[in-house]
Image (cartoon, rainbow, N blue to C red):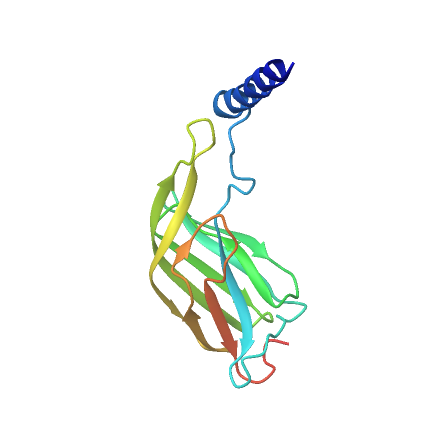
Length: 165
């Protein structure tokens, strides 16, 4: 009887190991889009601030020689997560009012990434340089140059006083 229990236990363990090793679904990432995260902060206190309610962020891209724009963010939040272009440059325009806006331009290296042959390919990015205007914002600090499908802070945007609110 003891021998049968031992044999059944060994067979159960072997069967479970076989199922785990050879079957099942591939473990594809749940999030397949890489987004740059910008946190909004007060330049003096370093405290988190919210973007104004009416502010929108548009992305600019040149596709087949034509300039394309699209709204990529329009919430009053203390951060924004926005997609990047598949070209080597991404430009964002933060529209605070109809006449007040700041532009952020990123130059980046695109890094195709495949985690499993059965999963869709991902595009990761590495920020090489950036520049920006300072109409409402004070400065931008690069926190993490690697942009992947995992949500991490990549930039801090600092505003003077309460110009973001």
